[in-house]
Image (tube, rainbow, N blue to C red; front, top):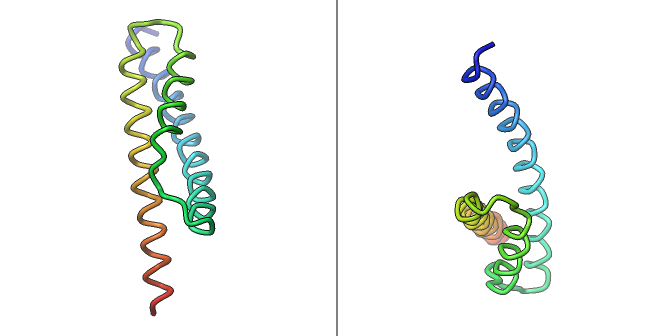
Length: 97
């Protein structure tokens, strides 16, 4: 098997794992959104996001990947916040029906 084909197969396997982890993460986001609703908390917690980024960037051993991983984390948190807005907006709308 040539190197390109092998590398692409590895990427496909990693992408499958990432998809599973993304679903698991979003399920946890649903729980966070519910908690925030029940406790009247803001969706955005800048301090928490900074801590998450700092902690996870430290897990990257190869410094040439750190910037890209930070961007990935920031995008995931943006997606999570947007999903929380959607969840809470839909619940508010359903409550008013």
